[in-house]
Image 1 (tube, rainbow, N blue to C red):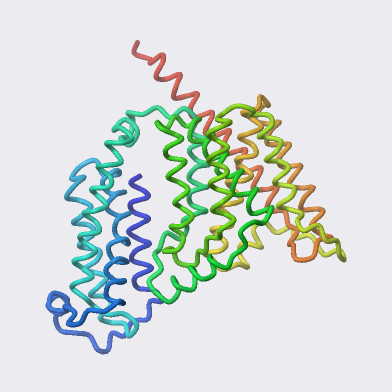
Image 2 (cartoon, helix red, strand yellow):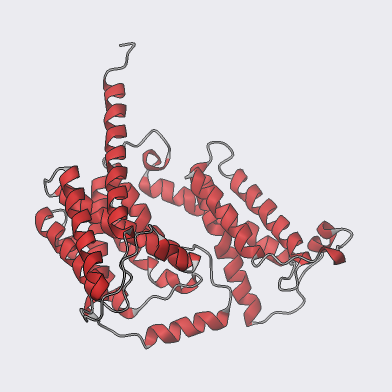
Length: 381
């Protein structure tokens, strides 16, 4: 959690100063004095939107700081938020596209305090044994790793959309998006069903409640830059949540093979054959050719899907090596068939990701066994 706190701080600094075009020729004499006296003189809808954005931007900082710090858990995140905000606002004096504002600084401090309050509420609801290191024994660390990949694919890049006109466009696009499409609906439903099983396997108290809350991650994409939810994804998420309430953790073998079938459909749809094109043997070349935000989002999504396939096969009773081998061979066959599918890029990356996810699961399992042995029979006993 402390690492997430640091990552959020760096992300705030990066996004607040992007695209990093500074003009040091017109350097002010006392930037701190200017900041403390830079109060807005007019109120409009844009001003109200800025207030909401500046509050929401620092809430994750305050919450992750409260959960990640060992000392000064209440005051520390607020102080860090104030220092980061003040430095960012003063740095904006050297840019033409940004405005230094003491009111933004005040909203950022309030947002950090709200984040601390949410952290305290989360700790009270989930229990301190879940959020304090060493007090909660995670049942399945592989499930926790997959949950991070899944949540990351939904909320990356974690930076709020600051333009009201873009938010309106996203809402209009959402209203006109298809109400049903088979593949997006099945993908969303399967993702939430598997996420519920992962929550149960990781030992999170109230897995059903947290899975229901996680459905809100989709409408939250409205206020995340470069993200666009659709109506069919929301319906699929609700369907997956309801299906988990009905099925729970039963039918592991059926769910595992259904998920493998979904991987085939996702990798070959819409099944239109064309002229063969070359196979790329350079790993991750497709990701490097993408926009960095789209690339990381796609990478997290694939890590979740391929890792979840291995995890589901393992949960159905197969050995980890066998489960990983099945997924890797399946991904290799899909990539080979994609050489005849227009619009697809056939490459070695996906089978390699399957191998990496299997190796990561093996490392997590081995580490857990060593730790369990040390705890059960210490040398000094």
